[in-house]
Amino acid sequence: MKALAITAVNVRRMLRDPSTIFFVFIFPMLLILVIGAAFGGGFEPKVGVLDEGGGPFASEFVAEIVENEDFDAIDYDDRKLLLEDVERGVANMGVIVPVDYDERLSTGEVAEVEFVGRLDQSVVQYRSTIEAIAANQSAVFRAARLVEDEGLASFDAAVQSAQLVAAGPIGTDVARESTGESVFGENLGQFDLGAPSNLILFVFLTSLAGSAALINTRRLGVSRRMVSTPTSIGQILVGETGGRFAIAMIQGLFIMIGAAVAFEVRWGNLLGAAVLLILIALVGAGGGMLMGAIFDNDEQAGSMGVFIGLGLAALGGCMFPLEIFPETMVKVAHITPHAWGLDGFAELIRRGGTVADILVEIAVLAGFAVLLLALGTWRLREKLTH
Image (cartoon, rainbow, N blue to C red; front, side, top):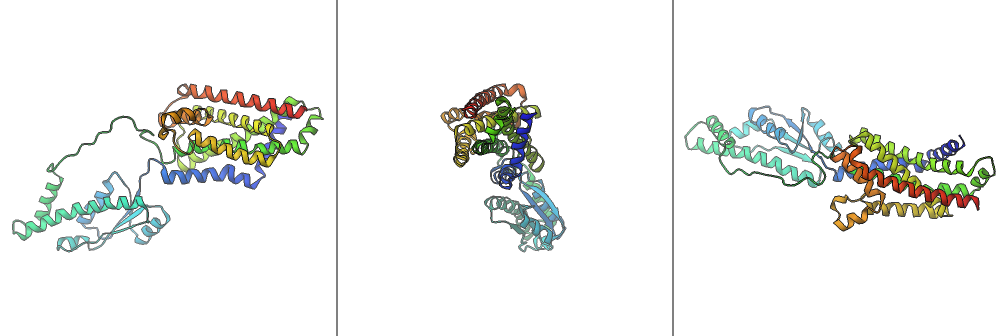
């Protein structure tokens, strides 16, 4: 019970600190959002479509956009709402087909389609796709107009013939074939790549930086007073270790559940993900214990914890995917527990693996945890008894 009380004190101390709340809970979620929005896979741009005319030609143009696999089309019937949604980011871009679209095409005039979007490189790229759809339809009407001018057929009949020709097999067929396997998997969601990286990064970062609290406990004489009571060294060590582990687990669970709810991150096999999280939290707790036992200055431990945590995260692949590392750097990265944790989550999330598929990663992380916890508790015992 005394060990649990010490653990509970450590958790309450963390939860009462407003700055800790931000960096432990809010900042990781914001970083997942930013990284996923900027670099995440599985992104399908949303294009809002407003047909103000409702004629057959306008409907064909809209249908081409809706059927295009590059877009997720959203139908609008209000111009103001479409513009507001583009401004707010609900839709990445918008296409407005004017009320006189059919009339202008029928009389040979220029029909202007309005395109709205943010000044973003991806929007510029997708605008060219919209322009290509408009150009294809324009080519049909130009051909029909030429046939009508030559007196070979009426405009409507010429349009139907031109549409049949455009939809037919005339021209060059280009076949695309992908070889090999996708580096990041076929069905990777927009936030699926960044969420595990940030989970591992912040659990270790918080654990290492949190070693300052353990030093404060010793510096303020709290540890000595506990030793002078009928509380054994073993109970103190278990309580302090439990505190580090509980904080890491609370943060890890918050990130996992929050990412799943807010960003629809798929963590794969739940048992495998839970085992990885527990082991990562144990490794982080061991690292925090070791740093808290080595250093005697809380400010030094806090700054070094951030430095070491970020350095290990960068080396272990939490900031840049291991898949883009050279082969030698991949081997170097696996001297860190981060790389093994990322390998485990990659197997679960990208390849649908189970616990049986990540036994190697589980064994290595367990080894890291045993080593760091043993060193941390041994060193802290030395500090408390001398």
